[in-house]
Image (cartoon, rainbow, N blue to C red; front, top):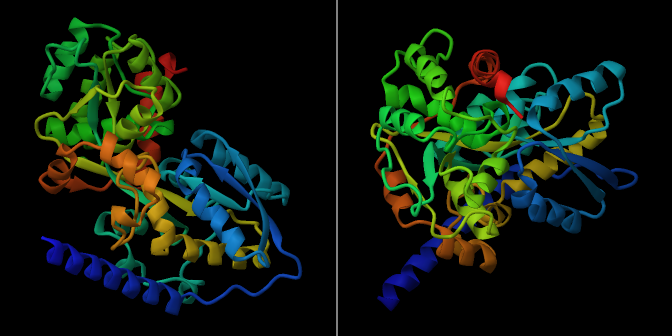
Length: 393
């Protein structure tokens, strides 16, 4: 057993060395600015709790390029409009963005700088570097952003086992349960919630809709289901955290969740550690990721440094931070970053709050991409108009 483990450790070290070599050999250094920059970073995906240590380590490794990072947070729906207004005024004060595919889609081909193919020689071979699901998400960015962390996501149901004795196991069963227990099921507004949009994007697979990738012409069953489900939902929070708090406090008994939103709130104590997760029959994973992007209007000399930052954050040592405390479980977007590379506190969290069933669920269920940019924006708009607009908070 000991010999096998030693061989495995050697294999891991070798694979990491190869990946490091491939990243390092392709990434060319940024030209040194006259003075190191202050870089403003805005997060609309909750990603700083994962990636901030890796971002800060770039400043420590390159004090000649960056003197300081200034971090701010905002909600996804407001970002594209805010950036467009700054660009129209010729005064962009946001240098680097951490976003989900919600805000990325809302600004596609309008507010984001096209980094590829112009800076291709400064970055590694992305198809070889990324995990297959992460690379599928990367292609959706059309060279305007880069996946920083990735996970299979959901949709999952999280529930209080002491309060839910009749757990539904089908989409139809969930609807019946919700009507029997009005106000006890909840999901958040999809345009600002990973679990919210993953739940909605997962329904076409559960319901056997005509085209799961076409929310306008292919989701007849899904929209009918969402309208009926709305009749027993009190309101839709503007973000996921509120759903977790209400589940933990007891005002909701079942909520929509994802792997990361299951693990992290239990680690934080927002949700009791013994709460459970479940899937519905016909379940398909709908993958999710967070991205790093540069807005149009950032000065070229800063862009030069930010491309260096992107390449740095795609190295295995920095990707190991993406395990975090389970927020995007597993988290790393690239090959050959085992949990053993993560900080000890991350390893401890995953060992305590992770679930053994996740390995089997990830290995043995279909994996689907989320909606592409235009269909995703169309879905958000239709959901706001027809489903939750009057009940959102």
